[in-house]
Image 1 (cartoon, rainbow over the protein chains, first blue to last red):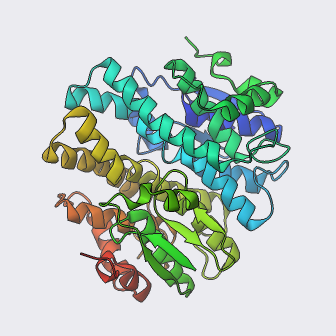
Image 2: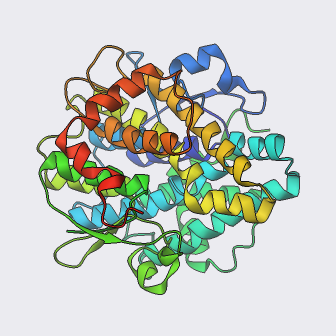
Length: 210
Length: 210
């Protein structure tokens, strides 16, 4: 499988973690977001909206949207599962993850912050404030939604919720966000990053890391 | 089932459509977003991030995040299915819907546009421009991702993709967006709105519609 991504893309990072948890190999296909390569005609033929990640399967089929790819992955490679089996428990794990992946991450994507600056005259600090504002909202909610006393966000093993959380925390560190209000999240992060699947997925370990 | 929503909330509208397609009844529990009722302690005990919709099941369990609720719904009430059975086809329908529900809708949520105005001094027209900018990106991509010659976005029946598209088009009309570049989407919209499940779900038919 070829993973079109970018070392700092949180959505691509999610997939790398999931591949690692499932014991699957992937090939990194770096797309330079800062150079705008995601807007090229070649890349848009894989994903018309011009966003990473895209997963190219061995038969050439191209899948986009990290959450749809995670759904495909968990169905085609069910072990270990990314969700608990109980339907309500599954919905809760998914909702916590989506509090990050749907309500937080899309607001602070590269293109969004770029548009905020170019069309509204917002400066660099204003862009960082914007990202941190939405991360605060998302982290505060996630911390209330996850289990208070489990090793991972929910239960004894990493789940979809941890897969969404860890890349967002990477971004929070990048922008030097104060995380002192989120001790439960940084505790989960430490536990996740000690696992080989998370370690191998880290942005710093990508071929295109600058 | 009690659906905490708001007549104009696109995410609550998605769920109403899906309930209708599945032949399920629900009770509307209006949350006045303009009055800020979604930030109340009572509502945040149902969903810590303070966003609608929330679905309260008959046993009192509260589910949040419309996409997680749709996943729960399609598993607990499988007929008619919201996705095709083939795994790659399923991933494509999901990706098209998420191009709207993940990459478009969260950027033009009430709270986001409000923050753009209050923290960055953006005026009413600037807020509308922001929403239309992201809808343009999402609609252009969706139009390329859906099937070119099917009655609905994918195939002969409405799917998850149509469920995500129709509420976003409602918002586009609300802000008088020029949709002339998206003939395929307005054609899908006309076909969907002629169905009872979509008609019954319309914002105008809610008890809290103003």
